[in-house]
Length: 136
Image 1 (tube, rainbow, N blue to C red):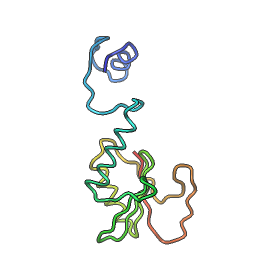
Image 2: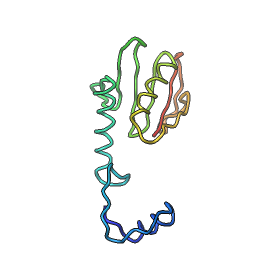
Image 3: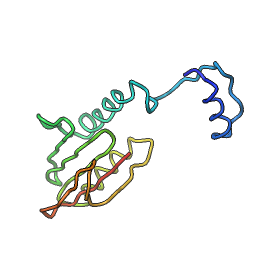
């Protein structure tokens, strides 16, 4: 990344760091929010975590809906960009999945409890399942 005047001002005023030269190049270790490649890189990163590392399988018709059967039963994860909805028969299983995702994140997940609304859609729980909603 090449330093411009607004970045230089943010660097010194907001981060309280020593001045940095305009035109200096700074290596970036991960994608920046708003960069054209960020959505693709995030999708690649989170898909690798859910499928390769945690053993979830995307459903055939909805690649953002993942499932896994294990000793806790069926676990579902609905992912919309960086929002996660985790569903299982037990709250403990949801918490465990959330913790596994959190271990791989640099920013903390926001735990929003039982889902009442997800991405603008009202949720009316008609069966006794525990749901945990996480957002990065």
